[in-house]
Length: 163
Image 1 (tube, helix red, strand yellow):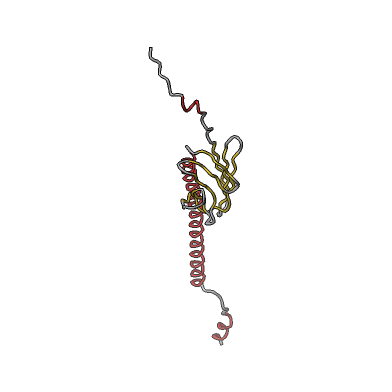
Image 2 (cartoon, rainbow, N blue to C red; image 1 turned 90 degrees about the horizontal axis):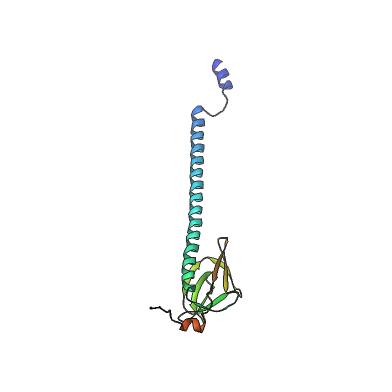
């Protein structure tokens, strides 16, 4: 009879060991999720830094291309310059900003991941290039073309005075 009474008093519940195992599994899961969140944050920061480095490289390269070039024409999508030939700069169908010859032949990508590009040149010969990136964000590049030297300035040699 005593045995029957004890069996009736027992209720179904978790034991202390089962509670500890559940807490251990739960804390392990939280630690894994926290680690993954840190990894994603770190990777996002690296990608943003890479985009900044790509933009800086593009600016240096594009400025070197523009230095010593003569402005020919520009429309909203392409810039035409004369250096050792006529070159065209603009957004391609492959979502990169590239340098080609005047007919659009050749392939020299300068920056990738471009959604749209707007090119304008003011009357004061100031180039404004606005690039929208596929990953988000907009960057603007400004450059002032040098005025063409006058014929007299080209022909006048530097004089040296000797007493």
